[in-house]
Image (cartoon, rainbow, N blue to C red):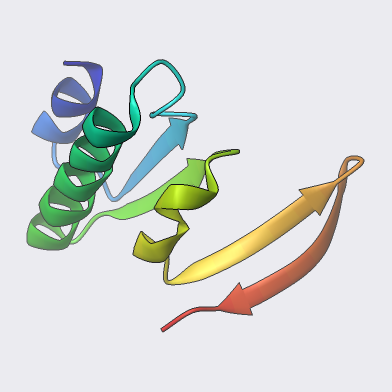
Length: 77
């Protein structure tokens, strides 16, 4: 519900901190796929923070952080 509410106002950027943390893998995938679809339709950028490696495939760019420091930026597509 919070994600849908955030996208209603057609933001240019959506900040998502661990959006799949409390979800099982199937529900988490569905939420992330829906976020990606809605963001593309609305021209919105998603900045997603996660520890869930299973959802990295939706990323255009992956930035890794370790011990409070950025240690890698990788373009995916």
